[in-house]
Image (cartoon, rainbow, N blue to C red; front, side, top):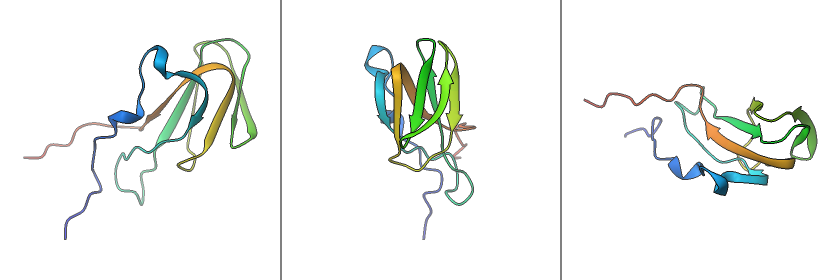
Length: 100
């Protein structure tokens, strides 16, 4: 029986450039390692000063232009911002593993 603990192919969770700018985001999925010990990390970055960010309806942080907030949250969590932001689903460390 095989394991899929290191499956990649989550590139569709990243939207680059202007299409990635928004006010409302849903936390996606990105596997970084074994699910039992390596949970995904998410990032939101403000484009404008005094941007309020809330996660699942709870006010979390105020960011200024260019500032980022890294967090962990359940898949499907709702992230909302008072001004346009970009958000990324990422990992603490994502290096290709040698397969041969």
